Length: 187
Image 1 (spheres, helix red, strand yellow):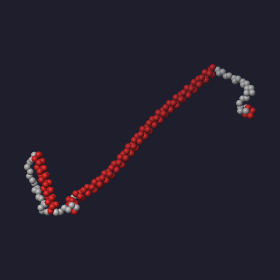
Image 2: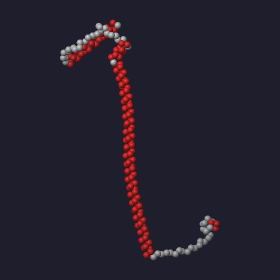
Image 3: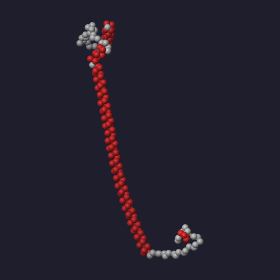
Image 4: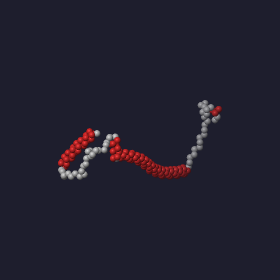
């Protein structure tokens, strides 16, 4: 067939088809059929055996792969935990170093404050402030009171001791007020 004579290679309806001969039919001998079946059966058995081996190899490879994957996953988990723990330890060491630095700074500040307190509470400093800022003068002989070193007191009960203590407190405060008033009037 050619394109130009047949057009688009489709059969034309006006042309009559050419009759074809019927092919020769081959009918095999029964022994040949049995031999062919036996060969096919043997080939199918070999194919099934190869498939079974392939599947068993695939299964064993899958098991090995799964075990390897689980080992790698466990190893990655352990390494990740170790890294995380080391990061936490490093973080806490930085935190501790910061706290130690703050403690040192606070100790320095405390020592400076203690030095200021000691310098202001020393007897010489108190005397200087009293004389310069508050106008304290040396006491006259009349203002000096001598107190005996040891005063013997009889043993008293708790109630009596409390009454004596209140009386002494009131007497001392009255004497102190009188002393202060006399000093203010004289100056």
